[in-house]
Amino acid sequence: MNTMKLLNKLLAGSIAVMLLLSANKGFSQGAEKASLSITLSYFEVNNQLPHISAMVKTKVDGRFKPAAGIPLKLFLSKDSSGTVIGNIITDENGQGFAFIPPSLKSEWKSSKTHTFLATFDGNKKYESAKADLTVAKAKIEISTSDKTITAKVFQLNDTTWVPVKGVDVKFGVKRLGADLPVNETPTFTTDSTGQAAADFKRDSIPGDSKGNIVLVAKVEDNDQFGNIAVEKTVPWGAKFIPVSNFNERTLFATRDKAPIWLIIVSGGIIIAVWLTLILLVQNIFRIKKLGQETE
Image (cartoon, rainbow, N blue to C red):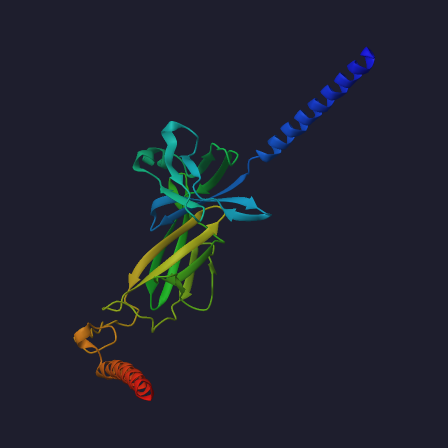
């Protein structure tokens, strides 16, 4: 009898241990953190004010989606307090950026190539993550002559700038939404002198009051140089002369400057509505009067 009781106790204890282990395993699986993917990009416009852009994504249901609200630390060359570019928090699109501060000027000039670092320490929802990007110093020079745009791409070699061959360059006209290509060819490749040229075929494009437009020569998503661009203003556009109709009768003017046809139409609608209401009221009284007379 005692043996049976002992076996029952051992069996109950084993079942309890198994349940605890399975519950602990389920809890651990439920608390598993998601992973993040960080992508860094380098940008430099007019050979000054370089900045770093970060894109953070996470995998949800087998698809990558932007991760918002992720705090990142950006560093130049090495992860230390003296090389901090800045702290950023990703927006709703999973993006954030920071300019290289003046305090890192000496560090920036010390080398012809630099490695940018981004670190995330992790939180309750995501595991820690890191990313790096190495770029070489480069610049673009732009010149124009007889509706031809020429760009030269140079790379810093020790203390001298040397031309770079085989770099794809895009030429465009800077507009509000996006750059407009100067002709039907999307990209131009630099030759042995680091030079690429394109013919300007947007003669009727609107410019400012003097016909000025802004030309852009840029290198995009280059594995060695990142994203670099240079701009130049030229008088190749059509002159834009603004015409003001502030004191004229238009749909967008003030009430006292409304178009005559609009006043007539709206007035006619108002009169028709009120006449309909008056006739309805008169008919109601007539019906009521006829009902009283029949009684």
